[in-house]
Length: 598
Image (cartoon, rainbow, N blue to C red; front, top):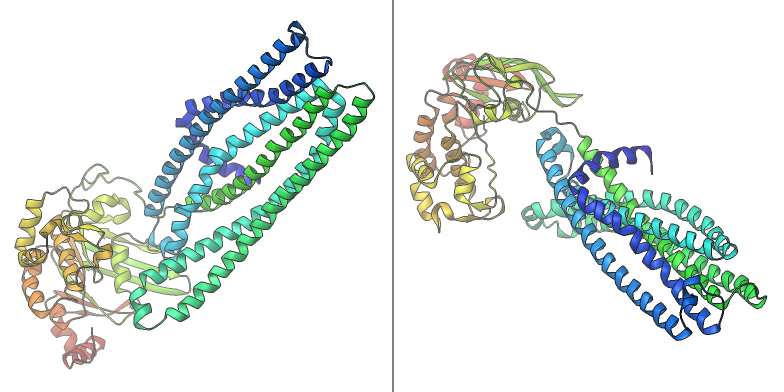
């Protein structure tokens, strides 16, 4: 185990603090289980010694041969029952601890993943992240559960058996213990290589899940463009890489088992040879030899289990490493400090006073060599509606993400009501921003849950807001109204219907600042005309930042910012910019002729 492994395991042991009582019970049972197992070969050997009339343990001499056999068989039977009962309690307790640890670690990983910025999620495929939240956590549970505790059980068993053997017959005891040295060294050598092979297995499994998840999410494109065969070949390559990686672990795992089996057989042969010489020489009884033959088997059994558990632990340590990498990812976006000057603090849901938005020399890039927003400065006055237009890649969507603190700018600052948004608690900032994106995401569940999200409102309020937005007809068309179940990503609704729900759930929150990315892009002309009047009422007396592609939306804005490569190259009203004859004028002219979008 490397130093980093020890550090990561130590950090994860905080999950064990609530399990102190059950862990204490497990540890208390270890010694009785080991003693019950170690005494059984002695009892069998003593029974043979009684039958052969050989020297026995002092207390056996107090009984007649028949009584001694009955007592020895009774104790043997009782030890078997006691061991089975204690092992049952131990196994149940270990699994219970493991499952609770699994649940808690997975919850913490989920919360940490949700707190990480979009920058992390942009580079981490969903399938790879899911592998860490599922199979890696399960492997980690084995380290805390059956793996680690099982190692303690085996170590205690080996210690008790070794001590008993040396006390009974030190010559054969030392001989058997010497055979353990090459076994232990070989296991350590093989386990190191198994660790590297297992890490590769986890990586290939992550890639396998990522490819599978990507193809399922893009199934519509796969089928429409007849990519089944091509994607099948690519998936086959990934599957083959995973198979080869698994074969590597199988080789080392089977090598350990085979080596221990051969050594254990050799140890039995060695005991029979040396013990037989001592028996025929009259220096040792047949009962003692029988005891050591049984011990030679018992001694290698915990060692065999120890090797198997080390395999589990190596897989678990690989999971610890991968989970540790995820937990080590820093949360870039968090509440830095409360604000007292505007009355906003961590425990309040204070609304912004005026909704003034200021970008002050903001620069941002996803990669150092590709700046998306460069030294951007503009101001949205309270109640002003500003439209962003520009070609694809000009930074419009990035500006929205920066305003919502989904990303942090590398330079400059963004202020709302004169306060840097980094000093505004996230729940306050985002509860005051109403975001309507062009691509609406809906969760599986019913319509009411997707409208409500984090808002504490009842169904009557939801119906009233939908009625004010002219969505009563839409709800009536649904089989069960607000209680209608939605499939994953709202698959049983059209794009326009999903966007209607997106507008409605923003209206429910009554935000101070509206951010809209072509809110009516997927609606038919009739629905758009109906909803546009309600959007105008929603925009009334609110600051708004609108990404617009339609000329009708842009014309109604108080001011238009024209972006190109992350910089503002033109600014003004629709009429003013048209008279300037610049980029906006060209785009507007092309759209009026139906040749382009803004």
